[in-house]
Amino acid sequence: MQSSIAGLTDLEARVLAARGAGPVTHTLPGLLGIYLTDIERGALRLQQAILKHEQIVVIADYDCDGATSCAVAVAGLRALGGTVGYVVPDRMVHGYGISPSVVDLARERYPHARVLMTVDNGILGHSGITHAANLGMDVVVTDHHLPGDSIPIDAVAVIDPSRDDDISGLNKLAGVGVALWLVVATKKMLAQVGHETPALNFLLPYVAIGTVADMVPLDAANRVLVTVGLDRMRTGQAPVGVEALIKESGSLSKYLTTQDIGFGMGPRINAAGRLDTMDAGIDLLLATDPKEARRLARLLTETNEARKRLQKEATDDVSSMLDFAFTDDMRAIVRGSADWHPGIVGLVASRLKENFHRPSFVFSLADGYAKGSGRSIPGFHLKDALEEVARRCPGVLAKFGGHAMAAGATLTSAEALAQFEAVFSDIAKERISEEMLNSVLYSDGPMPTLTLDSAARLLRHPWGQGFEAPAFDDSAIIESVKAMGQGGLHWKIEARIGGRAGKTTVVLFNQPEPVVGQEVQLYLQPGLNTWQGKTNVQWLGRVLH
Image: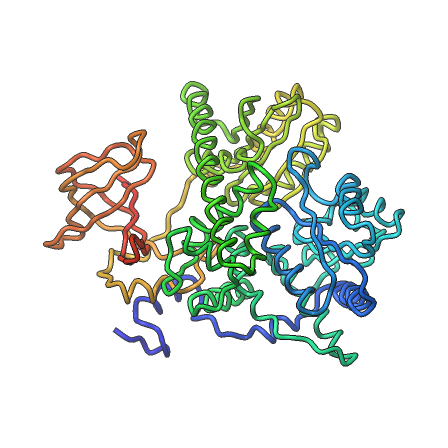
């Protein structure tokens, strides 16, 4: 049934209203006109570099946000006439962000480099930026992470909406969003001096992918960015590499959703940086030859399958430890092992946080180092907690950074893990109340009847972090159970839901085996599943009780 709000069904209107929102209106030009601190200084330096034909080198990060940010910067500045290359750190060799060794790598690959532009990093890169300045290179920082005690003083411009002196209100942007702001500002400055500039709409799919994959809150600004990017991908206007990625992940452009990005496309790009270098992911995004794009997309799928295996092994290891060690009065989980690849510790921490609803930090102790990643629960600010660890125990943390809900840390040694665990756990006990330990699920009511068309309409909106996807709960009687995959954790059930006469197929992930004939309460989320070119409605479920 059509609602009184133009273009929305009653169900869409009701679900959006429950989140305090209506449909996204495409006000991208007005949004991009909002001023970010230092944006003019950064755009002016890039304008000069383009007009003078100076070499620009983009310093990227090794996750999906970093890869898409790099694609926006490289493709966007090249379209504006720039001479642009890129360098992405090797997680195992260089660590995170613009460091002196990464600056040296950029200089080695591009001896005539005059300008370095960081994307999704740089706000904490003081030493690397100073090193670049001493070598005669100007650095323009674009980042979205929280700053430290000071802003890098040797940078030409530091564009980060999380700066204390930035009043844009855009501090929820992903790194790819900040990169877009600078490229658009550079286009405007070039136009002011009569330089012919093309449209940059082709960059919007990169922005949508990076924003969803980085799990930043989908506030009003980010919903606009994701919506316009999805619209281009759904209408066949995606770059060659993105189109190959859509097909490789088993999705159809026509029905593309944020779920497809979050669970299909994003993990494939992320896998490159987790287990190898991000070059394959960036090369795919920048690809112009369809055959090469298909090859790279397939390579990322293979890498992602390897990532899944490593992640499962590490998750099983931690779960075995916690079978004996976890108690209800624990406020945090900290674990480490020399057997865990540093590229998957964040994923393992995320799974622990979901399973136990506790802030979780997981460390790889390989080669004597202790590199970790953490995930948090609402109300416990992870970066603030790390700052408190550093204050109480100055010799434990070598470096750290991040946000409220996700952070990374490197310890001074593997032996420092026990002290980190003790102090971090103490801070969690002080700051986490009993109420915060209650995991809350939000429901939009009883399960509705959805056709492919009505499901596609509902799921076309930019659902994600802080703007949760539609979910329902209803009573059900389980009629049949079939195991999926290996390990005895995934099930396909047939159930009579909400008193309906017919059966509904529901997929359950990471849950105990359901019992045929049992009456349960199901938490249900609609999705679209494409198999052999045909798309159907698929319900994902969770047994509540």
